[in-house]
Each structure stands twice: as C-alpha cells, then as structure tokens.
Amino acid sequence: MKPAPVKEMISFDDFEKLDIRVGTITAVEPVADSKKLMKLTVDFGDHVRSILAGIKQERENPYEIQGKQALFVVNLPERKMAGEISQGMLFDIGYSDGITPCLAVPEILVPNGSRAG
Image (cartoon, rainbow, N blue to C red; front, side):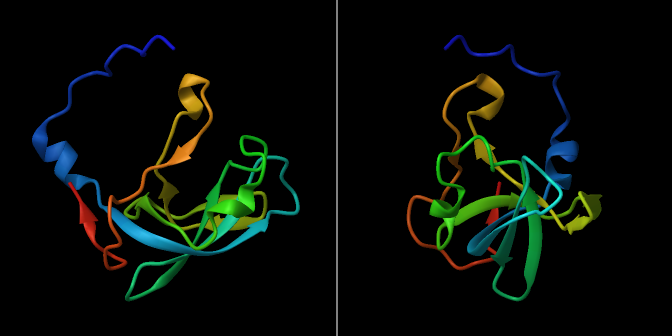
C-alpha cells in the first residue's frame, strides 16, 4: 500500500473540537434498508448510543466486533441514514486505503467514555 498524502493542515483549536471516546460495542445489528450499514449499540459509561457504521460488506463477519472496545467520534450532529439515526462515528482504520479494515482500539482495557487526544 502506498500511503495517501497528508490532508490539509488544521489548527490545534480545530483538533481540540473533536470528542473521540472509547466505547464498548454491546450489540451489532443489520440495518434493514441498507447494503452497507450495521447498527452498533455502544456503551460510553454514562450513556448508550446507536452508531451506524458502513461495515456490512467490508468485513467477512461484522458481528465479530461485538464486545470490543473502540474509538468513536461522539460530537457530530445526529444523522439519519436508511431510516435509522446515527449518534456518532466509528473510528476505524484501513477502508479508505483499500486494506482490510480494523478497529482503532485502546492498548489495554480502559473505562468506557475515556477521551482520546
């Protein structure tokens, strides 16, 4: 794989606006009206969210991520897709570069809701 060019520079203030947190994926369900989307139920410690992720076709078994911790962007506006509401974004690695996607995960088990950055 040849790495993509680095994106346009942003300010540190812009970076600090991102709220990236650890959550545990407690359920993975297909989204009925979508060929790509799976609905993830994610525990962030003090609350639970539904987050839609386009992983249905990019993984041999999209259910294998259930029970795992991962990173999520949690301060995006809610977005309706295929009749479902998504309350954040899964932070995964690889799909944009054409390699097998994987989760961005903490090195050790950390409390749900822990912030990255």
